[in-house]
Image 1: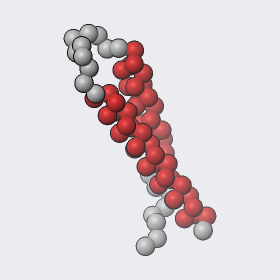
Image 2: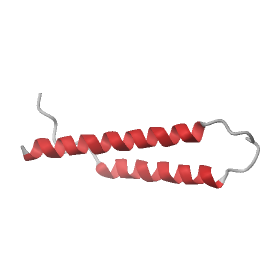
Image 3: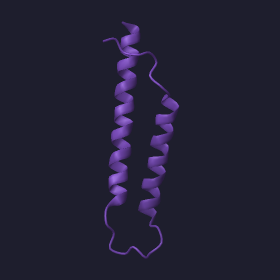
Image 4: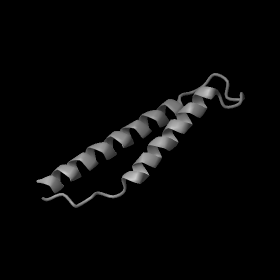
Length: 69
């Protein structure tokens, strides 16, 4: 049962990180009124958050053990 719990926890954490990355990328893609202006501080913050979430996802690694079924 311990292995199944670890796999389930890993799946939930991975899915939460993927949703977070998707939400941040969608926020970054919103049309901006002035596209010619240099990158705003808000955009830089969003890009940093995306990079941090991707790093967490990379550090999570692969699934600890294949799920049964």
